[in-house]
Length: 344
Image 1 (cartoon, rainbow, N blue to C red):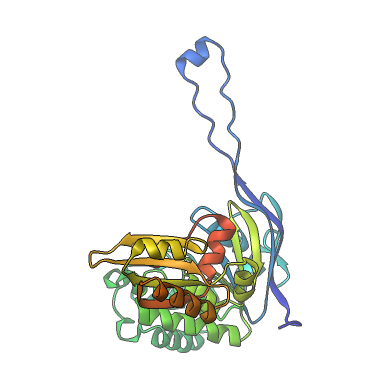
Image 2 (image 1 turned 90 degrees about the horizontal axis):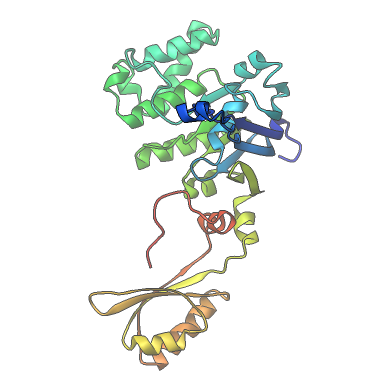
């Protein structure tokens, strides 16, 4: 990996969108008042990153953080306001044709394919647009349709597909010409668990084949499982970048012990007052959920349980929860990507 060629490179990449100037109202004209021009929206702000061959790079960020704008600039669909983007050494502005021939792009949503054609016909058309030989199209399309679970519906019209099936066909389209670089925007969104797992396995296969993959995702488990490195983007800026385990460690978040208790709640609170970080609501059956810091792991858990038992509080259930990538993300950005926290 250390000597693999860099296939995706950005340096100081920036994109600003001009806001529309408000219309002048009649009284503005009468009073000869000018309408101020609003400041531009900075969607991506001075981002420098790289992805090597055989590497999966996860780009994480809340909605509106700039993830899709980054992918659109890398795929030549948007011109950067400043900075450079290179794919396989080709500049996204000066060598746009060479860049397009070397990338497979999948954006979130269902409109990447033609609904009035069958799945197989879609792949045939996109293969011809990439100047692929007919036999290569048939072989490659058949393999992708089989792997992504679409073989039985390959000759059905896409308008009859479910959202997840359209998503998988969109992924097959981006992989058809076997590009060295893949830009995948939420590739497992709307997929059922089995299809999402198959997609993650496919991404790992592509990684083993030497592809460079830029993956945007809201799924923290997916990022932790699939990505070699993760970049966290917030308000257009890359605020952190490292291996998932290193990001978690650098956030300095201690493990926490989640307890389900019954008994004298006031005694439990007094015993754990120095360490308690989160307290839940008392349950209908009289139990209470509580979480305390556990810097020494299970040794801490044993000490906490012993203290509570001595205070006459019954520990019904205990679980040690290690810090996760979501914890690191929240600490670094002050927000979360979506979904709900695990209740305690």
